[in-house]
Image 1 (cartoon, helix red, strand yellow):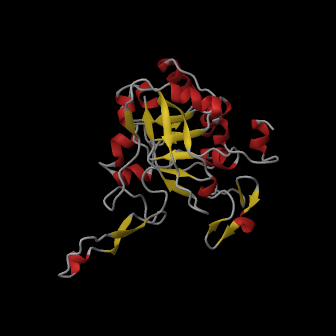
Image 2: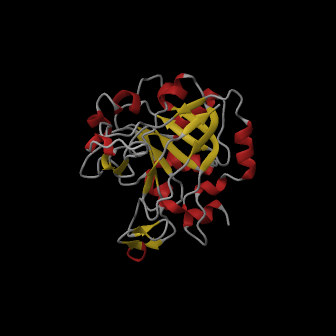
Image 3: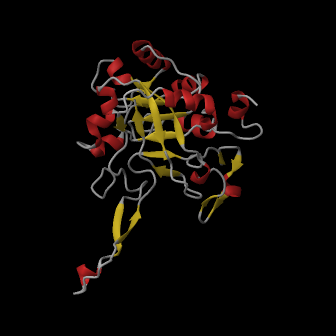
Length: 289
């Protein structure tokens, strides 16, 4: 079965991650030369930018068990504390699961949502089915390529933009690559003006995303909260990737350090949590060079 069959929803439904095979993984591991690790994710906490509350349940940490020495006169030789964390899996740096998006009552694999949605989440395509992501990462710094601090609000990244980035960095997309697209929006707004960051933003256009997929991309990551141009257009990159092609997207990434150091190729590691029936997962992605 070829990639065109996958896009058409014919037969079994391998995801974009199936493109990272043993050969691609060995090549990515062999690329590490310096032993430097770059953090590509956000810090999580109650003070973090969290997005519109009508869509996202904010990050909360509550105490479930506190040390006895805090609440009594006892001071035992062994004690412990335990907390409870509550939040949408789509705050901070996160990966969108294949159950996250629906179109015309269908989700990835052609499933009717009425058949596969339950009281405790999705019966298919939940995050428990996602694989660890270990492979070659490629940074496409569109903002730097266009010589701007950040792309204009609601700017749609095109195929031409991506080609210019690749030519400038002298790299190409290979099968299994995790492609990370920098718009500059994170650095400009995420912490300084989070309301503006989430309200509207530039994004990767559907045609550009399909172009990357056709060249072998396994996962798409961005420094924006929505991957698409926000507010979302009628035709979305989310549908083209998550529903039609089984390609995960990673959002709200901190790509500033790798961009500053002009690191365009690296070993990429991202381990989604295997949460049964969930539409996404918090992640802590890293780039190793």
